Image (cartoon, rainbow, N blue to C red; front, side):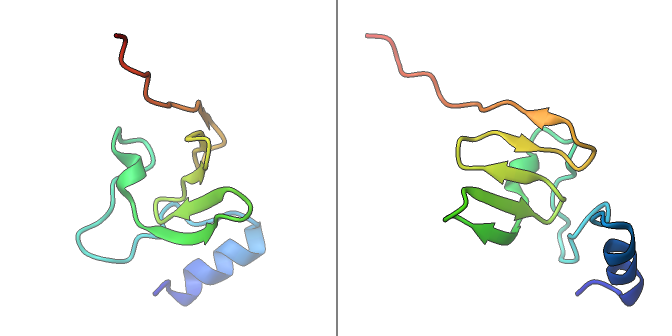
Length: 82
């Protein structure tokens, strides 16, 4: 559970804390290559997005947004050539 300070900071500044990860072991950071392995803290499949505990926003097309606003391009697997 987030501390009262984290909750107040998130609501007063309009920004999420650097990490929503409060469990052990900690999830990968938003900058690590395996960032998508983080736990989902909010899922809205009807809208096509999920928020991970490392504050990464993932979209159903495999793209996403990092907490600093950088874009993750969609990365669909390429079909094997016959």
